[in-house]
Amino acid sequence: MFLRNDQGWELAGGTAARPFGRAPAVPRDLGRIERLRGAAAGVDWVPDLGAQIGSRDWWRGLATFTALAGAAWVLAPGLRPLIGATPAPLTGTAWEESRAQSIAPLAWGGDTGHHMAANDLVAPLAEAPERPVVELAATLGEGDDFGRMLMRAGVGRGDARAAADLVGQAVALDQIKPGTRIALTLGRRPAKTVARPLDKLALRARFDLALTLDRAGSGLVMTRQPIAVDATPLRIQGLVGSSLYRSARAAGAPARVVESYIKALATRLSIGRDVGAADTFDLIVEQERAATGEVRLGDLLLAGIDQGRRQVQLVRWDDGGKPAWFDSRGESERRGFMGMPVAGRITSSFGYRMHPLLGYLKMHKGVDIGAPYGSPIYAALDGVVQGAGRFGGYGNFVKLAHSGGLASGYGHMSRIAVARGQHVRQGQVIGYVGSTGMSTGPHLHWEVWRNGQTINPRSISFASVQTLSGDTLRRFKARVASLLSVRVGHP
Image (cartoon, rainbow, N blue to C red; front, side, top):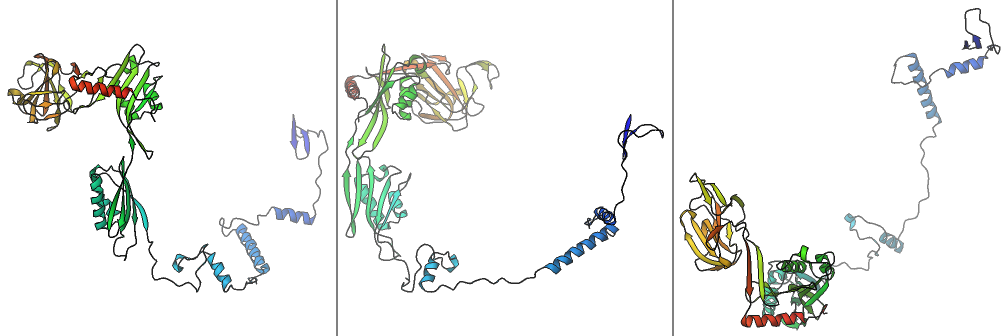
């Protein structure tokens, strides 16, 4: 075993161990300067003056700091100003040009910038002159008054009233559509205390009529400018493809027209099951094209689809009543289920139940719908009022007779809104929710009969067919022939 000491390698053991390997190093004597240098290197000349205050090391550090600060003070060059060259001040034209390129504070007038500043030849004005003519535009808002709109734009009360009277002679003011823009030209006024006179007014009063008002002496003169309009409908055809809606939209049909088209076809076939990708859709839409280039699309007129083996063509027909879809033979068919006659929740269904007042099991011949007191009650289908008044435990009661042997009753009303013998349409208000008769709270008792037998209102479906005849049928067929003669993509 070997151990290493300061003199080299030695054998481990007691005092009898003898040196092995290289000879041990013999220390040499250091000179005086080397000893002083080594002693100085071991001294901390810059101790922390915040620790061990009053100790020997602290006093040594303070002496070092004082010596360094004194040396810096003695060797400092002192504070003496540096002399530099000063340019001569600008005068005359050179000063004006330099000032025009500078930036002056707003407190001094802020009249500097890229424009040349005013010199002594410029005479200041007491007030800025007004523009001789002001051109602006105003927009008619929803429910806005034409005269008040002009006054808000700066037209005087008298000119605004005169302009409204003239425009009203050409078109009813309440028929001007909201959003219509009116171009105005206001002339010079004699003083700032009065409104500018109306020199000119121009607007598109209707799709086929433009109006212009011009100043003539002390009054206004109106000029009518009729605009030619082509009312030929727009016909769109194309393949159904993967999506009937997307294909019709890609062909140029507006979204609301495509929705009406799908709803119309859904009365005769199933869109998801019966319509195939190879089928051809056919739409005819109301269209107005003005000579000035504007185009306005209206309602859907014809909804058709060609399936090869089967062709469906439905025409929208409005003969003074509610618009309906008829096929080319003049027949209209409607299928569906009865809708809820009041907005609420079903509190008691059709069938046997424990009567809440009598306390025994009893057949409930209708459906109870809980709703807030006074809620409107709507007719479930078109029909005629067979009875309207007080009816025993039903309280205020209305009975409607429908086609196909159907009848419906509405009980516990707070108020009745129809009379016996009156014709009502589906969705028309016939009364209001109440709690009259044998009732524990505000609700509607809804009852339905088929050929005199009570049935569940929520399970009944209906199908009604309406057929045109006589002169109405002849006019309808002429309308169908006119629509089918429209070319696809008529310009």
